[in-house]
Image 1 (spheres, rainbow, N blue to C red):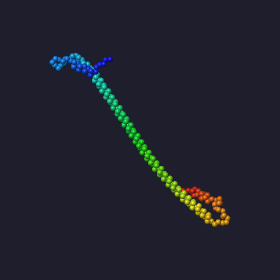
Image 2: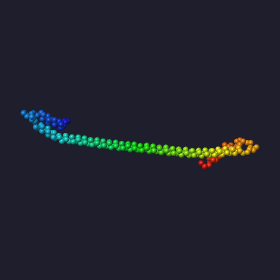
Image 3: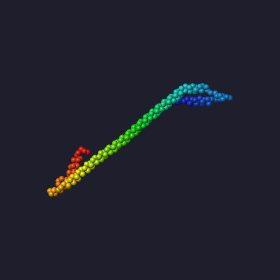
Image 4: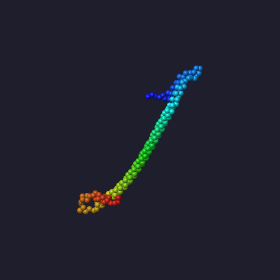
Length: 185
């Protein structure tokens, strides 16, 4: 397939024709073959719309490509902005959740300390009450033993109180149970 010469080549052919033209004697003018130059210029004029059409088509293609590239670039920038905003929102949610968690843990620890102090106070009160009760029971036991010792002994009372089947410790424990079974606590 024979390639038709492009517009640039045709212009070069016309320039070559003019350069190859014979000079006129005693003048700077040249003699050219009019028919050759006119034929070359007419051929160029015939092809000019085709060259211009190709150039316009190339410019249009370039503009469409640039517009498409701009659209894609804008879409990429918008998507990146949305992703950045989503990441900021997620990090804000995480920051708020962490702050809330710290607050909840601090509240729970404060509540635990408060309950521990209340429990310790209650235990202290109960132990104080038990101490008072035990002191009273011990005093009652000692007083009972002193009364028993102070009773006059008869000849038939040779038996040691401790040797009887009654043990004072058992009596103290039973009186202790009676004291603790009451609803005075």
